[in-house]
Length: 155
Image 1: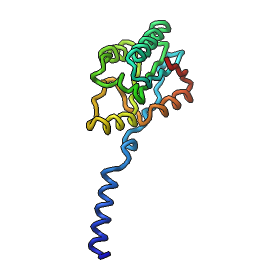
Image 2: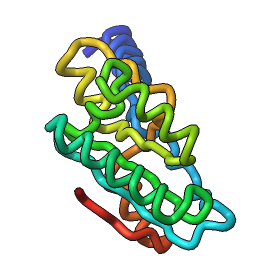
Image 3: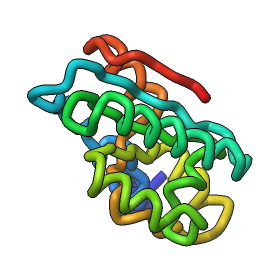
Image 4: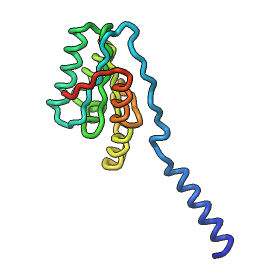
């Protein structure tokens, strides 16, 4: 192999590696910021595409916030796999997610791994609800929250 061909191949491989670098490395896990006066820390998982399950997880979160009071409960909803549909901007629950974040301080996490898989299937990256915070991996976020004392509920 000539030197020129070798250098050309090396340059192409280098450019390819830069362009195709790991997307999840760009997304950092947000710190776990607990509400200062919360006595209950709860993470709800949504990994199901069923609209009834999406409504159920939102109902459970709202019921917990009303029961304990928005200042006494720290709620985080993690969406991954098919459940990420809940946090897409065109989801029928868009307005409700925004209102729950503002009225109750509920946090919504969207799995970056799932978002990238959706992007591959659709040919474009779908727009997320403005209240969704992208985390590198939804399941890893749940593990981190549980390790920090959060109770996991899978409605």
